[in-house]
Length: 194
Image (tube, rainbow, N blue to C red; front, top):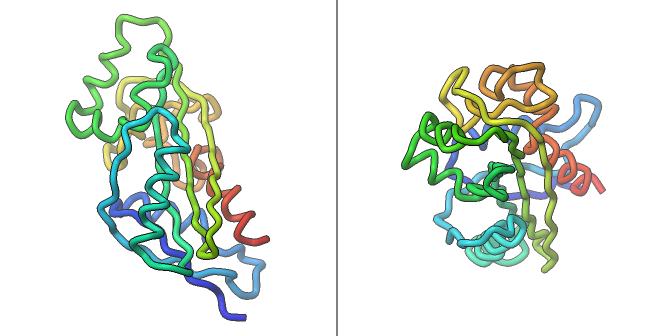
C-alpha cells in the first residue's frame, strides 16, 4: 500500500525543518507509512487561552481549505509563564514580534518566579472526518537571552532537563528529545504508525 500524504500547514521554515526531523521514518523501517507535504495557509488566530481549542479551530479551517479526504495537521506552540497564570501562552509569537526577547524577559524582572512551561499542541484531521489532538509540555524557566536568535523564543527558555542551556544553545537532536514539540510529535508519530 502506498504511503498516504499528510499536509502540515505552516509558513515557518524553521518549524517545518524541525517537524521533518521529528516525523522522519525510523532507520529500521522498510517503507514510510506517510509522506509529509507542506502548505502555507493564512489561518484565523483565535483569541483564547485554551490551547487545544486554538489548535482545533485552525485544524478545522485548514481541513476545509485543503479539501475533503486529505489528512492535514497544524501545530501551535505556547510559552506560559507561571507568574502570569499561563500568559503570554499562545500569544508569545506576537510578543516576540512586537517587543523582542529582552523586553519579554524584563516583564518578569520584578518577580522571583521565572518558571514557565512550553506547550505544543498538534491538531490532526485524518481526512475521514475525525479530529485528534496531541500535546507535549516541557517545564523550564525564563532567562536572559543566550544562543542564536534564529528560532522564536528559544534563546530565553532554559528547560529544567537541559543542564543549564537554553533551547538555542542546544544541539537540535538533544533539544528534540526533551522539547515540548518533540514530545507532542512522538505521540502524533505513534498515532500515525497505528
